Image 1 (cartoon, rainbow, N blue to C red):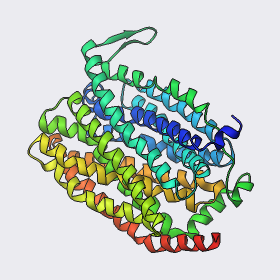
Image 2: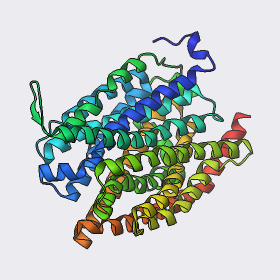
Image 3: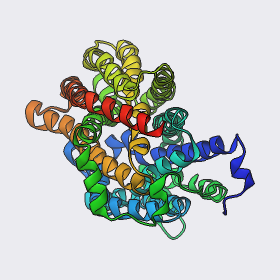
Length: 440
């Protein structure tokens, strides 16, 4: 659609936020539903915890390593709404294909292309919002967009729990053309269907004109992007590595909490799906939005480093809860301690990453975000979940010891991430103050 007077309406940018947020929810549902299906997949395909962790996370890193930067360059020079729409179609077909998997490698291959969701949606979405919102409103808009991913994780667990009960009650199902499928395979197929509505909504999103001096340039060479990053090394190390390690801790919790409750407290997949899903919707979503709200208030009060300070404080507050919840003697105690861990652990992911479209020139925004998401996925989806699995498999050599692996890995990743973000705090404050003087 062409940019028109409707896009200039005060409400329209928030409509764009709503559509992008719905896309993030659908993306996360398609991505995270596998966390509830670990046990039946392991039993049916005869694979280990470590192999499951690779399917959960490393498969996304493969897609990012190959295609994230080219996709981001396309988004920086072309129509970002088209990029997102093609990504939706790709990840939906891939999710459906997960239901056709007959072994580890076929499931792994399908999951690689589910990673297309983040590879197209994240960089293009951040870039779109950077052109729709002022720098004062951008942290809240991006926090809502980012928070919808946490909402999607919760929705995936809640919907997955009800679908699991219904589908597993049916037993094996015979589908036209496809033939007999296991219940876990049918679940993958069903959760891919909402993308049909999502594609229709994306057709209503208007591509906005680009802001800034670099917006006048059709495409910046990758060398210019790398040069910009090197000129601000301390800041980008803090964002790329620090926030990625924080994300890695959260991904490890999200990936293994369902199996932790199943193995430790003998809960069913549907029981933990409903409880953990509701908690993710309430606490993780409110955490990321509150982080954005707090950063916005602090920025308006003149605290230029708020986008770094809020993530550091939130992560440090999260550590004791992340360490304690897996060690509780009862499921009720674990859920009670898990709630603040989800809340504080989510706070960095709207505030911190909102600096990317602010400090990166327009025509390299999507590429800078893509580099961040590439590293965040390489570290986040791989290091966190796989480290927990490796400690369980190789150190404890007992699946029931998963609780101790969670208690060790997640807090260590949080602490390391907070320290690295803190190392870039002074440089970030200096850059923001310099940019403020230049804009006056």
